[in-house]
Length: 124
Length: 108
Image 1 (cartoon, rainbow over the protein chains, first blue to last red):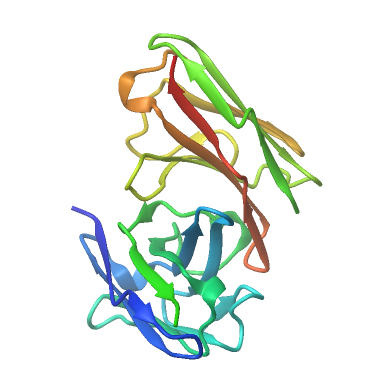
Image 2: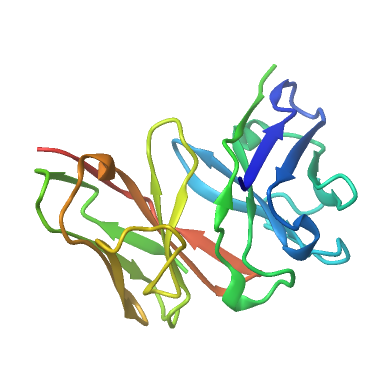
């Protein structure tokens, strides 16, 4: 069964850091670009970051560029999101998701498998 | 690129045909996906490339449109279809990707 399982969410103070993990199973993890998205009741769904299959190419949303870092360990079939200098508006449910290709091209900009999500709350 | 969806909420009886609309502020060609989200669950991909059904999606779901106007049709609504539906454009991926605000389909 194809599955993604996020972990690492929780409560963090403004300016703090948190690292999310996403364990993948049931598919050839190294063959697909992987992404993080987030969702809040107010702002809806928002794409955060993506990494290609080999881990050599990354892209970020403007709202997180310079603060967040996406990476992957293909030997462990695990995706990561390092979040630094966190702000209250980073509070959200964070999802990892799989794209249909290993490379990052326009035709592959949709997400065919999603994890269940992990809640991140930034508050003093 | 701004995505809008209408209506915001749709009250429907099981068995009815449902048509959901998604509009882009500028052309996105056919780089348009649809997702279904039930309470407490992650979004599920239904349609990509405006009209291609994702693996395992029932044939009662269909997508159409191009440019700025898109439609998701559910031919005969089943009880498990009550959910929020989102459209998403990816025409400038990975530099720009946006979701619509969603349409909630609930029981009439």
